[in-house]
Each structure stands twice: as C-alpha cells, then as structure tokens.
Image (cartoon, rainbow, N blue to C red; front, top):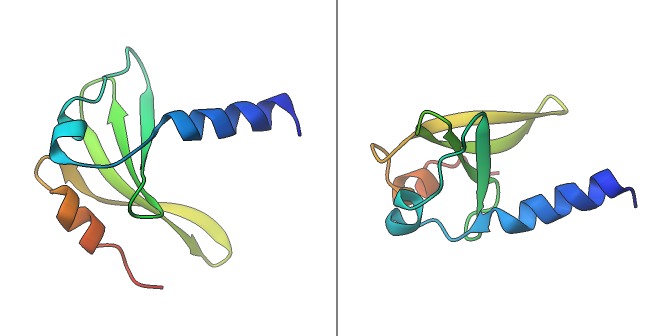
Length: 90
C-alpha cells in the first residue's frame, strides 16, 4: 500500500462524523479550499465546507460507470434529516 493511499484513508477516517445540526454548525472553516466530511449514518452522504463558510450536502453515485458527486442542497437551509432522506434509492 502506497503512502498516498494510507494518507487518503487516514483523512477519510478523520473527517467521518455523525451529521447533526450541532456538529455541522461547529465544523471548522478551512483557511483556503474546502474540507469534505463524511456522514457515519448515511453511506455516500458528504458535506463540503468552503473557505467562505458555505456548507453543501453531496452524494456520490456511479453514473454510466463514472463516480459523480451530486449537490443536494446547502446547510442550514437543508436539514440533515432532509439530506439523508433525499438520497436516491439504489
């Protein structure tokens, strides 16, 4: 296993949290770029936090053999419960 692969796995573990309103309100804002957090309760659900403070719910889906990320909505306008419920069924 390469060092890069190990670092990616570690980063994923460190950004895996249970999405609640309280935890999402307290997420750190990066000085530049964006941070991706993964929900521990809903597989494929993520939240991006940008340097400007915007928080967007995303899902990962395979479309025509390619991995795609689809924006569901923005927090706090969209609740955690709604984001979890909006995920398309397989």
